[in-house]
Length: 178
Ligand code: MMA
Ligand code: CA
Image (cartoon, rainbow, N blue to C red):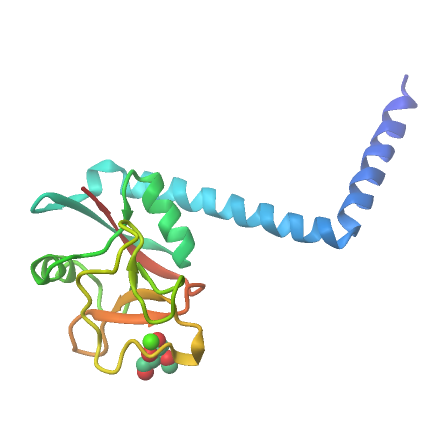
């Protein structure tokens, strides 16, 4: 019996080593790591953001994530897990209320993209054309031809306005709940 345990351990290690040596499994591990990372991000947002941290404007509730930067797709996922969606402000009044709470110099993802159709910016929530777009002068410019996700950013002392940015970029984000 005493000799069986090390033997079993050796077999287990051999199987694991064999598994992880193929390139398939390397990318599999990367995928698993991504999923673990995104689960951790959700847990963190749930803990810090919880349902109580949504604040009210009119008939909507907003949550501003200021503790972790994530790519646009993770931001989508986290907002869903919090029971809402990545925000798409639909009036100047709403944008003004949100702007007051943002931190200068930071970038925040919104739930708007032209991933499906270059130049056609859709609300992720409705699947329809975004009704309220307030671009920084010169935007959207699809800089480098890979900017498909919309963020709020402020330059120096200018107000927060929209910019198209690479979806893989890690930024803070704003969730919304009806
Ligand atoms: C950055 C990036 C772009 C934006 C330009 C404006 C250099 O790229 O934020 O999305 O359009 O700045 O100069
Ligand atoms: Ca841009």
